[in-house]
Image 1 (cartoon, helix red, strand yellow):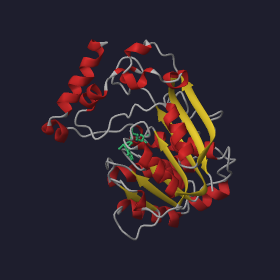
Image 2 (spheres, rainbow, N blue to C red):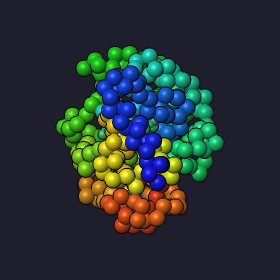
Image 3 (cartoon, rainbow, N blue to C red):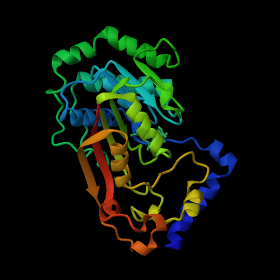
Length: 315
Ligand SMILES: C[S@@+](CC[C@H](N)C(=O)[O-])C[C@H]1O[C@@H](n2cnc3c(N)ncnc32)[C@H](O)[C@@H]1O
């Protein structure tokens, strides 16, 4: 077990060195690819449509990462506005424009949703990966993809800091829910983000302020070790001190919080969970090897490796 811990801690120590921090240019993962953005957006939209029909108007995303592509897919589906909240600005205008044009081709061709064969790690899974004609009719697409609208979106992508922008706004870093008006979001989603957020309490509070009553949230959360250890849940064997060393100079790593913390925070901040799709993996580590704070986790928390959660903000 100690040997398994040594490598991640050594990496953490190296990452504490200031010159290493400046040398590293971080990549976050999926949104560097347009097909990933298309797949993730259409999965969240499909899940939303299991409880509320249609296209939401005011959409927000937590933690878009390498591009704003998932939000562009929302705009190409006909959403009125997109707000992005992150702690680091990974994207740039050139990449955003490229992803936007590629997404446009996918929508114009009504391409099927890239499925589990293409993206085996992406949650939520859907029953069918055909283009969702039932949600996005030809008529709706015609309006959403009109040349004047596309040009208006492109203009804002090219000039993201223009205060006159209305379609796309970003808040990076955001640290206060007051950055946007209360009740100004109808649909909020995140993909592989909530396991990284340090201040989960403050973030759920922000969700509750941002969403209007009746607004919907859709989150896909990965509780696994993110390659920090051999076992999928080995990150919970580190003491608080050891984990600080593993985290090193990084602004965030993974918060190690289990599934039930998200269930409780949903409830505490006025959200009713409508759908939960946990993914179960066996725990092969004896309980006494876990750090003290994780030793008494419920069997459900011990074995939930990922979860998709859909919820509504109660009035
Ligand atoms: C693994 S990446 C996922 C990026 C993207 N959602 C995707 O699916 O590829 C995690 C993202 O969460 C962001 N993040 C971490 N803490 C955050 C916070 N407190 N608020 C907003 N975003 C955060 C990171 O900056 C990064 O963009």
